[in-house]
Image (tube, rainbow, N blue to C red; front, side, top):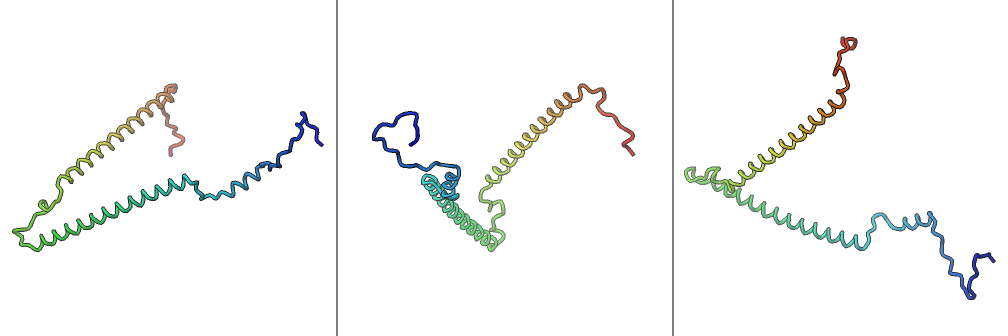
Length: 154
């Protein structure tokens, strides 16, 4: 019988022995859970994401099919245009489906080019300011900025 600091009540029954959780026991339990296992919530979220991806792919394939059909129709029109007499043929400008679209693309391209130029100007100005600040900080205490050492020149 072990000595205790306090007296146990009469009729006290010792609880069943519970295993002591050691580091080895915890590692063994962690190994039971496999790396690719999902919880129920993770599994549900993954299924929803998979369904969204499948729906998006179906929509993309329908759009691609309609684009292929439109291209085929346009190629047929071009072939028919080549067959008819030259007097009745449509010019390339007349065959252009959406002339405004090319203008929109050109404007958007110019806007993007201007944006890149502004970013480059900003980066160049920032680098110039940093160079000036660093030069001022490092060279203020010097008597000479640079000196040529003739011993190092051939």
